[in-house]
Picture 1 (cartoon, rainbow, N blue to C red):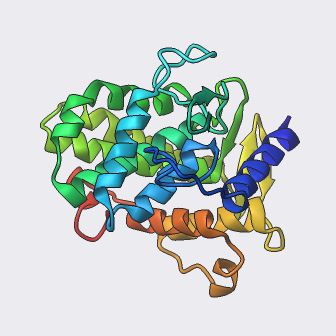
Picture 2: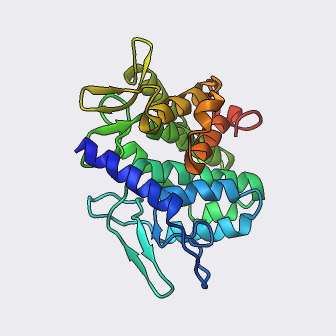
Length: 280
């Protein structure tokens, strides 16, 4: 099962990276990432990168994402989103997602950065309950060890996903705090709980585990780019350690974007105010 999960991640990453196609029609998703098989996680990352240059295009995508949430999905979860096949005449859900937690976390971070860039809080107010449903996906997938599962039916927890979860929850907590919503504290506390769980569960004798399945740790090495070296680089970025240039040169666009995103959200220890300024 673990091998199948890894192969699926690699296959979808290759698909999103290399099988880009051009279309003659406009679509809120394909205007961000031109690929007929839509993996929202990759679109979220591309939108984060695009945001400073074209916030209106990103806003259209944010609206599309919110309009396509599952209530519920095939596993009974609300606030998730499926992968999609999109053509000029149809949007067909694939009835699957690669990692429910990372889709949610990167979208929460995207919406936070959108408000930072544009000052448009009305979009957030109009969709606040949906955003809370998205954040609850992460909370729902938290396991007894404090880590977040990638999928509801598999007890597999990835280091990169859990760091993304920490960042997404912390960004959403600041967004709620700015809206004077008392729920900000729950998400802020949860973000720290996930962070401490990463340090407690995915570090072993000074080594970094790229994933945990049940009680088994998968220790990252320095020779395999994905998932091993990539996970170490994301962890280094999260704790403020420099990532060697030789490592960075081996990562693709999406992996480098995650590293850049995580650097925005270095660990913050005290209160939600610390997210702004030197952080996000």
